[in-house]
Image 1 (cartoon, rainbow, N blue to C red):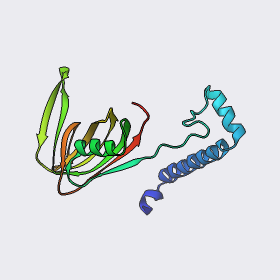
Image 2: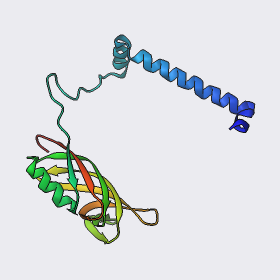
Image 3: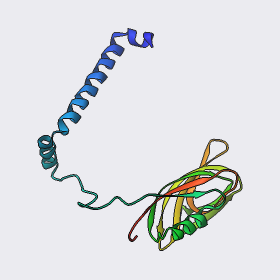
Length: 172
């Protein structure tokens, strides 16, 4: 590190970065003032969207634990038990023993190419619940520093576990 800072050019570059960072911090502090924020919003021609109206409550996020069995079926079963017919699966994380995913053919988006992998994988994904049915897309990290991704038809939990974080919605 000392050698890297010994040249005038590297010191100058570092000082420029520090000055830029301080300028950004000044801008952020200035934006916290209501008058300045309104002026900036007026210049942009819009206001920040209000996500919830006054008096509205934040929807609860549910966590569905999958200790063993098939993930999609388990999400659907737990959603049904919780009374969730529509929802956003905002995060899906865990480890699976085997999985089946599909992707689209390059020359025909209406054709599914279904592939089954009977190897363990680290999984992360997202999806939705519509009319009680889970629709999940995920990426699986497998041996050899490779990743397999697609629409999840099946993912079996046995050795590890998974968690699905779901925000219930009034309708899809």
